[in-house]
Length: 88
Image: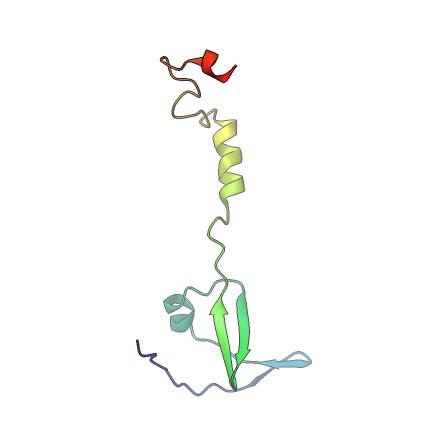
């Protein structure tokens, strides 16, 4: 597998007492960069990586489901033909 590198010149800009870079809307959208990124420094390179939070927002959605009484199990915990005596 070959790695394709995209080379792009970016200017360093003043941000308050710090300096930073500005990423275009196109790059942000293409690489799914939202609010935060991870910076990886490796072998003379600085890699900017989007932080992925796969379950972001789930807690609020579960709370909504509970409020709407829509958080019921899809199947019962006990099957009709289950034999409880074998567990004794």
